[in-house]
Amino acid sequence: MPYLDNNATTRPIPQAIAAATDALETHWHNPSSVHRDGQAARHALELARADLASLAGVPPRQLTFTGSGTESIDLAIRGVLGASDRETLITSKIEHAAVRDLAEHLESTGRVRLRWLRIEEGGVIDLDDLDAALADHPRALVSVQWANNETGVIQPSREIHARCQQAGAIYHCDAVQWIGKLPCPESDAFDTPPADLLTLSPHKFHGPKGIGALIVRPGVRLRPTLQGTQELGRRGGTENVPGALAAGAAARAAREWIADKSARTTIAARRDRFERAILEAIPDASVNGRTRDRLWNTTNIAFPRLEAEVLLLAMSERGLAASAGAACSSGSLDPSPVLLAMGVPPDNAHGSVRFSLSRFTTEEEIDDAIAIVTETVARFRRVPA
Ligand code: PLP
Image (cartoon, rainbow, N blue to C red; front, side, top):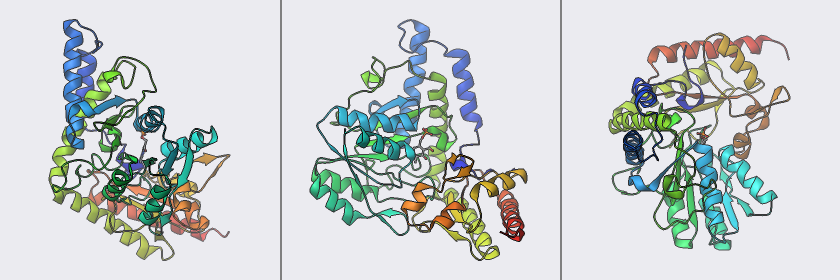
């Protein structure tokens, strides 16, 4: 079955499974215990921390384990606001719901003034608008993703960071879609990742779900949202040792894979072939978001006059797993707020499906996926409206 769904989260890798199994069998103990077995678990946890930190290009001390990418985002945003008198949150409507919904919640409770950034056609934030926002609110907290989970469009994180540094703002970067897929820092010319805080989530690079990490750069003050002594007091709660060890193994494998640039060029070429074949076979289909400066694994395609949910179910029956950037509500699929914020017309947004390849997607899976998508769309197009 071709799995082109949900940013490649569906494929486990043997290294991660072996690490989780080993942890369950040999590191059952609490890593905060002072006895020998506890300290063995602590040692294994610290090695995993080093593996993840190395994938992100930072020293291990800067990395805090959390329960998910969503929790890391929550800790970053609430933590910075809680430790300072900053009153403005600058972010965008193309962020993951973990940022967008939190931002709206914090505004509704009166904790922040919210400033949404303008989005240019193609799905990139408007840097001139960021300049204007920072001129009005230089001590803001800024949260802008590195790459978009629905379209793969890459944001100019280094420019955003530079502007925030100049203004005196703090920059949190949701790097969930970047770290583990592309080098971090993004090129050898830079020796630090471009943000004051970065969120990562191992299930985006074949690690397990239910574990995340937040990177906090030196000098950034953070008030914990879960009290406790663990994680240097940044995040209370006994650590998820099997999850962390599996994440560490996934980070090692991802780092090795990223080191060979030709590997991602190969997968990007498969994604491009898939995209070309769909656009040729279905003349009114179109790609959402710009097609340059994108993640190598993602495409988001609009099929006007069709409902994404119906397509997803029908494709799944034929053996193709894909997803839509949308939430199910009262039996119908709301169009993705991200696509609407990018200016995608509602009719296109309703019929948009995202296809995500993984490191392991083969040419044969692409052939199968092309056949399933084109035949499914043709079948529904034959049904009179
Ligand atoms: N941010 C982005 C860009 C994501 O793609 C995701 C996951 O889909 C998250 C945040 C949330 O991460 P998690 O699923 O680990 O909570």
